[in-house]
Image 1 (cartoon, rainbow, N blue to C red):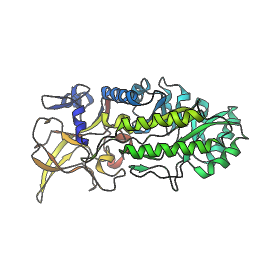
Image 2: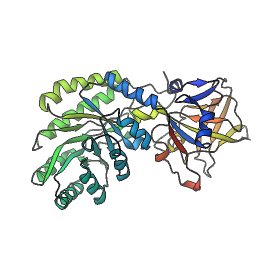
Image 3: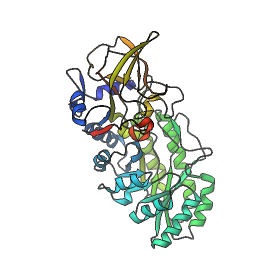
Image 4: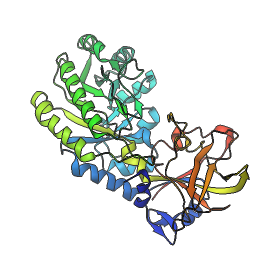
Length: 408
């Protein structure tokens, strides 16, 4: 099963790809043309059901809003997950406009401003402390608002996890408080008007190796058990992060979710519940929930030949889908799964490069990909576009129009 098997998740009708049962050509008319992002609510619901079916029942699922903060997506997920993780005041407002209780919303990320911290404290969400400065600000704000802050410590672990697409822990980091500094900070905070209820440890993202994730979870639990000895009160909140990856490229294999769940179940039984029976244990996922549930659709506006190569020029590009261009963390540029959305039944017989309309050679959505013959007016579909698409891209670059977004 390769990354391209994700295409099979979407139905086709008379050679046209469908999202939420709607063919792309009709969908393009409904949203006012191309480019656009389309997300399938049925696939979102199915992904959460898959997680619920294999994860230990005690594990709470938190959705990382940063992966896709479209309000309609967040509202749909509010009926399916146990909580949200946010990283800005705007994401916080989006989360609070759903049925998820504020106490089930966590606010993480470095550089939270005093205004953001005041909003978070006033709303009653869980603030994840990223620095000693942030902790002291929370104390001052609590005194000003006459609110006793409930917070958790985000820990920069003293171990590194290999095989992650992006490392968020271990070594020097802007994320979290170094594990060796946590006991001293906890001692300081024990004298303040603040309830530190637990820890958040997130070592890395986009990992497809179940053994590596299991090792990260074991090391995370060992670290938390060690740090909990310096916590004045019992651990109530334990966010193990996530890091579950999805396949993007031809050689990628899907994550063995069953193996990851089995490891979590063992850790719950033999370690967490033995020492901290009352702790809420949370897995925080973003990309894994929404990534494979969305597509980016753009239309071919020109077909040109240049010294033996064929270029299909589209009306979208990296300003909407930076990740697919390779400029969102890829060391070596590789192609996302891609198709001609109105020629799904045609055989791939020609090699082309799909480029956008921006004045930069970086604006490449597909480099030398084998596709069915396509021409002006045909629809190019980029898969795995449900996470880190629109809002993770330089939309204002060159003043191009914003894409539409739709949840079906």
